[in-house]
Length: 493
Ligand SMILES: [Zn+2]
Ligand SMILES: [Zn+2]
Ligand SMILES: [Zn+2]
Ligand SMILES: [Zn+2]
Image (cartoon, rainbow, N blue to C red; front, side, top):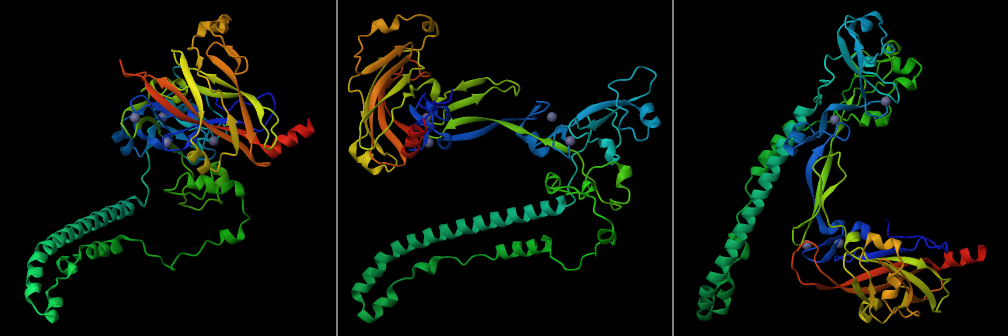
């Protein structure tokens, strides 16, 4: 359903775009049509609100408060620390695990009664990483219970955030105080000016200067509270030091094994710990991983969000997704493609500079009513100010009608007989599609061929019952490829 359609001529990617109310050009698939303002709205003209959080793997939904507590991570699902793929929960029996110390190959999907207690562990089906590789104890429940680990720097980060919040609050209070005192001083200045002017009329010229008040005299000096908070910040802030422990001799003497060192990507996926040891089997790690060094651990999966879009002007909802994260349906969707007639470039001629060529455009009506539309050129002032317009266009002067969308009409050819179309204007008519001729004259010998025109038709709001039709004037832009490329294609073919 993409707006740009490649014509049979093989020209370089002609596209059709519509001008949003903020003058941004975008295809109809990227725009909303607000049914209250009756205006196109692009992604910048709508406010995006998070409606719900959900895990993309187990599809569990949660409120924003719960998501905040869980640090935007799912409590059940984990990502592989090596490759990032979602880890699967594997089942094993306690007896089997005890019998086989290496245990990684002993993965059964279930145990019969009498074989022992069922235990669960995590395993990556892509890179075969297992939670047993890092000596992580097997769990009794499939739900996991893998805790979201607190960063060792969590306390100091919390203290820093508290201090910075207090600095922000103090600075805001000071700003407010300054603004209030300046306002007060200006009011005092205006009130006292009359009295002083009266005094000036009766005083000598030398004494007049001393009579005038200073504007800054009423501004209160800033209180020293910011400095106090900054002193507190200095206490909790980290201090750089050159006193660090030397690296152990093994770093210099032992040969480097890249398979035991975590990559930059793996370390950055766990920013709290940034473990330097990669995940390899415990036996292999002996001698290569320093005592006390932490190995890569599973990362709890980040949550995704479902967002609704709202018109910034009238605050009505333009797009509202279904609450169920497994559903792709929407409760309300005012995407412009469903409400605004769209254009397609059917036939493109071989353009020649300063010469008129005939092209065929198709208009598609997605509405349930017939649309009578007229096309007109942009006003002279607008066209001359627009550097992107590099060609002239000659449009049909008469009003054209395109039929309503009707899925059953695909199977009969009776529509063409309803209209006495002028063959010099209308190329073809089929169901809710109408093809018509336009003439295009590129003004430059090289570069893109771009034209703009206005589509005018009467539109009735689809959601407001009994509303009057509105005369809608919508700017349409056609990018018809590049002149240079067009010549190249012609010569090679
Ligand atoms: Zn916009
Ligand atoms: Zn999950
Ligand atoms: Zn993996
Ligand atoms: Zn609106």
